[in-house]
Length: 241
Image (tube, rainbow, N blue to C red; front, side, top):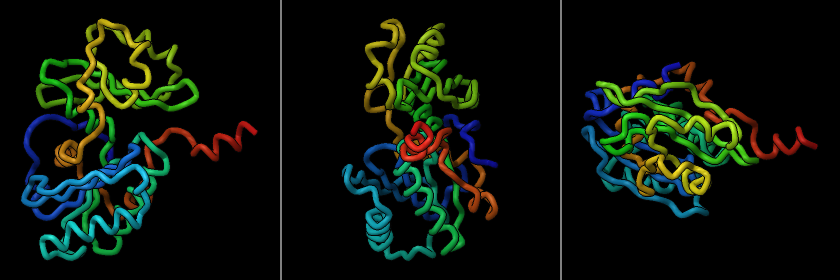
């Protein structure tokens, strides 16, 4: 569907990222928004934890555009993080991106959140596990390998228990992602950790990965859903009840 982060790697944004681009990262507790012009992020802001509603994003986007004398129809496209992450946050980000794409006809590029985290890995890392807390003693986990063209997924994203995951940490692989903070005490001491500031995706990293991901077709925009691999908390509770 053209929305995987398989082509994530190094280098500068491609020509497809020229123009005016909005970047939405809502996978974490705090939403991050960026505005790019001419292939580079020129404005970025992080909203506080309580401001993750569509109306808050809309007000921030409006401020970005007005600062440059633009309207939504002047957008070339929208880059949005599709997960994994907060179910509510992801839905807000994706719905906002889809509404903009439908209303203005601009392009939409969806980026795997873990691909953006891999983009931030230190230069000395060659193998990288990106993890996030999936609750109930489980983790989201995906390994990336550095190649001549940059980071590529070694395997598909999966949800496993922490006990299943820990034996995979071997061979000098680095570990990054928001799950490091949660499970740091259980990660082997000889596994290098990415710096704390690099474990959460930044709008600059999403934008860089997006330069190597094709825009979605109209049909793909319509079908786009969060990369969550499980139901919402309410759905999970309903099943267990």
